[in-house]
Image 1: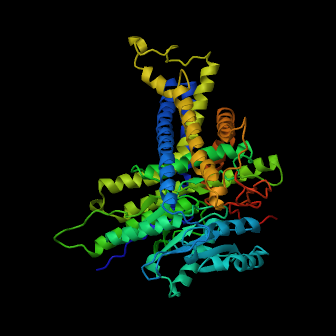
Image 2 (image 1 turned 180 degrees about the vertical axis):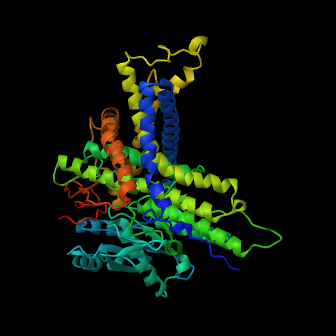
Length: 625
């Protein structure tokens, strides 16, 4: 008898079942539990305060230091790759001519750009940047518009009229309102306006178009999803084409299960955006650049903002649900669990009495493309303080990604209820742990560590600059420490050097390297007018040096402002997200975030490329009453 396998990858935290309610509460439960332990440690058992702080300190220190070091290493890998690629091709990439022969085996690229009320000049600029990519004449570009934007159709027509000749196809989709997401348990929710629901609709339409177009072969089509302000490197698509073809030739079908991610840096407007935006950029750049770099070293990372995957995988896994917020992380996770589901399905069909059950795995992998993508940070055209308000709206949207912890837990629970014990291998269990722990570290551990270290610091101050149970001086030679030396040291009871100063210094150096390698150096070397190269961060020289200006801004920003700003825009925003996910799930109101380039008509130190003002560059889909 054929037993259907439960599609655990289709789990949704809005389902009407107890498991869904429980996993939604997990982040809030972890937060409340930690706060309770800290309070108990302050007023009753100091050792609890020390243990909680020490554990969180060690976890965050290892993560930050390893990620920053990987990013620093990756900056040299990026430098070498760009030199090799651009040195081997002296022809201008601006024309975007393709030298590949037309055939069913040729890798074709479908690029979807979700957007809502984006500045037309900014979209024009993004399409111009795409047209400069190698092989762009063979691209199928889709503008994912929103039907409720009154000027969407006129805007799309003007952009198509201007840029259609640069690509094989340039179309627009118009995501309708009042759609619903139907869950595996039969329940349904209204779609949450945002990038995820827009992507879901646009990709489905693109898949239909490709399926009916004789010039495209589904098995050779690669989908790229990118925010509307992202400049991808001119060689990005060509690199993926070659790797896709190489994986296909290897004959193990890995090309069907591979996602691609380049390190993304939001520094196109580094010099002009306020400190509240730059501080977030330092953290985001380190996570993304370091995370992508770790992939080359055997690490684990999820896709973010602008990424690529096989079109058939996107369609089969239904990567985007209409009622989620963090579409990028969700698309990776859903692909991962879909891979495990298909592995189980294949193993079930191939089961024989001779071999029995073989272990299940997920063949989904993320491959790094060490060619940085460039985007912009929040910078409101309405003024300096308006940026602080819009950055708060962006922060609350980003922290809503904590819901992906709940999705991962729910999908894992359903997976555990579906698979048998014989299906598991050590490597698969380890991968499951990584999938769950990555968003846990980003959204929960980081917040709890900051709160614990702040609590211990205040406790130390109000206790006369001394923590009971801990010696007053740092000495490893005194045998009378009663075993508390290591615990007090890991908790940071004496000095904040190891839990704070060392990570901060690494973050500073890493971000300098990112800006130098991805922005300053390409802007100085390129004379051909590529928008990607011309986007050099716009930094003005201080004391005659752009490098000095960048270093000075980074040091001041991180040393003086990173902690206080992230306490509000990081920790507080996360706590609000814990509450919202627990009681409302992904029900959330988007607010647009402006990303102005300060209205400059020129951009780039060489003044070889123009960048018009970019407003609302991140998709922020909300109807304002």
